[in-house]
Image (cartoon, rainbow, N blue to C red; front, top):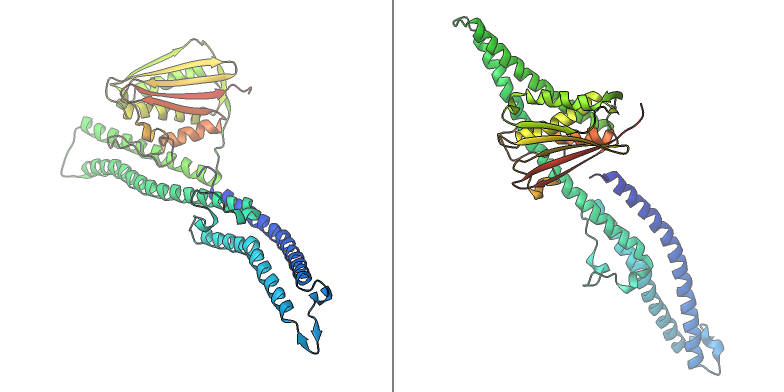
Length: 380
């Protein structure tokens, strides 16, 4: 999907242009060869039959009678030449045209008639070898794209259902507490009212963050990039403050956070707001997908002009089968107790990519997971 279906369409257009020029060249060449073959064979056969009177290679007419042997020779040469012409030129063209027609109808497999049982191109298709191979490759790519699109649609449907649930849950809290506060038949103490208001505020903040992530995702989809507001940030204190914020999150109260670095001071040109969101999402991901007592270490190092931020945990790890999908847009964890419904890590990767950085992940089941962010140190 990263390549996009438009690139494959462009490739298809290039193939058609190439096919057009090849058709003109090969058809002209083939027609010339056919005529040379026909005339040469016709003359030779006539000379064999009429060695002493070879002028009869034309439709020799004597007293209005066409020589029958010459007619047979003419017919033989014409038929054999036509067979060869069709075999080497017309048949491959028919195969190519039918394959392109199949592609337009969503059938991405090229006709098996072009290949042997061993998968090799049949010898008489050699003149169009490059075009046929390109069409086959294009069909395979389009088929892969179609499969990915179908998988994405299924994931998107599941994700929308999850997001709908995520929105309904806090909204039910808000409407529930609001209705209690508006009920004149009940009187609540000031402490109870503050508790209700705090819960309403907390759920409202959660909804606001979810909508912000949705807005950012749709912006990325429509513009295919993120606009950064670069500022110079002291990254050591930035990470310390961020870890302090996540530690104060009620979700993180039973997890252990540590920060390690040999750097005392390091300026980095980044979009502070978006980078905060990216690293915060990574840390909250470690919290939501690991049990209480999990240790989460953040390590900051520098190698030349490259800055590395490693986030390591000793939690349950990630299944190897799903490890490559965690940055996908609509990937959802099978852990239904989490509130991360597939946008968090997708947004993380988009933000890091926008900073011309790189993010990678490694994991061992039962031992933990490690995320590594690499950022370049640019001058402000």
